Amino acid sequence: MRFTTLFRLRSSAASVLGPIAFALILILVNGSLAQLQNQRPEPTPQAMPAASVTQEIKGTVKVTVQADKPKAFLAPRALGVSWDMGGNDIAQPLLPQILMAGAGVTTLRYPGSSFADSYHWSTNKTTGGQGPANPDNDFGRFAKLLDQFGTAIVAVNYGSNLDGNGGGTPEEAAAWVAYAMGEPANTKPIGKDASAHDWQTVGYWASIRASRPLTTDDGLNFLRIAHPNPILIKYWEVGNEVYRNGYYDGIEAEHDARVPYVKDPKENEKQRKKNPALSPQAYGNAVLEFAKAMKAVDSRIRVGASLDIPIEGDWNASGDWVQDPITKKWVQKGTAEAAGLGVTQKSFDAGIDWDKNVLKIAGKDIDFVSLHWYAADTTEASHFKDLDNAKTLMKPEDELPNILSALVDLLRKFAGQNAQNIQLLVTEFGVRPWANITDEVVPTLFATDAYATLVEDGVANIDWASLHKTFLSDEDKPGPVYFATQLMRRMADLNDTIVTTGSSNPLLAAHAAVRNDGSVGIMLINKDPKNDAVVKITVGGAKLADTGTRYDYGKSNRASQYAIPGVAAANLGNNFTVTVPSYTAAVLVIPKAK
Image (cartoon, rainbow, N blue to C red; front, side):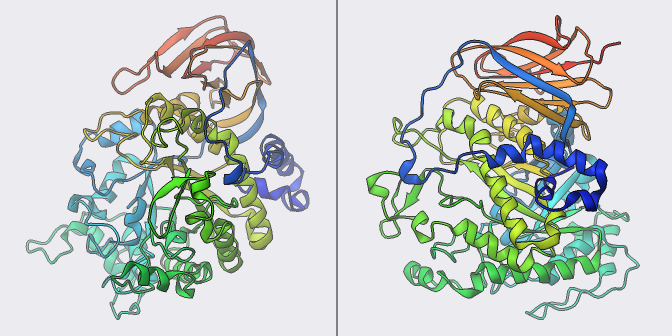
């Protein structure tokens, strides 16, 4: 089961899937889609409070785990992180062990962030947009890393061609697929792009991958990695946050050279705003062209489109802030100073407009959609510099149901029968880098809850926004978010079943899984900064042992080096009470009764 099951209840699924499959879908939707539909709509900026609402846990919190009511499973590619093209991690020999064995991550998104729309895999260079990448982060080295690590999500270059004087080309993307997935004997031509660059054949690029470096480097030795077998990469995303190319407000935050850039910022803004070449319709048509060219190389791959958050007034980059287009000053949404200003003014439903128009054209053919989701609320007391911890920790419960429900509606309206096949990938999520983090435990708790919530909703891949700063330090030591994926893997292993849970207090999040060996993993996240939570847990649908193992991570329970230590836990079973300290995530693993 996956994200698409949220859609299927809206159709005549019983007649298509049969009674057993439909019953499973009902189980999933009763646990998630119904919840999505019952959420209150997102408040407008004018209604948003300027400061956090004080909340606390009082009394016993009741948690139920229904081990016989599955919602989803932990997909093999679910836990991911976005690669850092500016870092030097590719030369770190312990990186596979740090990420895979330590953090439990199985997927890396490459090339990561805005590099996607300016990076050229065949030259290891950028054109426009981002500055140069670390030359050691070429795709040849990255491909060899995957042999030791897991797999990848690749975002192909939509923003710029090889010369940097136009948009990205389907042929360049197809050649990338050929290098990764092709066979050396395949003579299928890829062809010339619009700038007359000849991208040769599938076998040409596969042969380069399979060969050893030449004595005299012809410029392609970085791609010669002596790897005769294909590198199996399933998911290929067309561009990165293409909706930020300046079409709606003229302010280009994502490189898209389909419209030439001029030096004068005001003239550049004028030329980009509402330019048809930057429109969602243009992108939708391009996605179809990219998908056709890439799948002609290997039909097994899945190709997806970049969508914006489909909530009215939610502009991916803004968070609590809007920008005055004249003074360029950023001010908080909802204040008098912000009225009529900034990116929200460009088109209050820009995200919805982008998504529906992309889906109108490409929705019947694409394999997945990609969303990026960030927490960016800041506090008034800090003059909007410090992260609002309380709001941030409630984001998974307050925002995700609205976002997923709105996306389901758009798919139902514009993707036709293909809606039931479309998967959702969240290829970036995190905390906005401009927000000052005052408590490092908060990103851990936020990320843990978000990973678990998105897995419950059947999301196929979820990538923390950046490998560095909050996931790993610059010295490749664990950052706070490193332990979020580790906690996920303590609760559930790959392909384990995620089951239905309930909590009587929104400040105590609960998630659970039935593991393949019959044991049950229960995750409890206390979002109260001051009060411990006394939690009464009832587990139905399974018979559990009285003893198990407990893992805690929080302000009073930091990890030792790379691992959260497990300690023996007693007096468990199917009905028991535990205490979760303030600002702490706890995982209990309870074997089945003998």
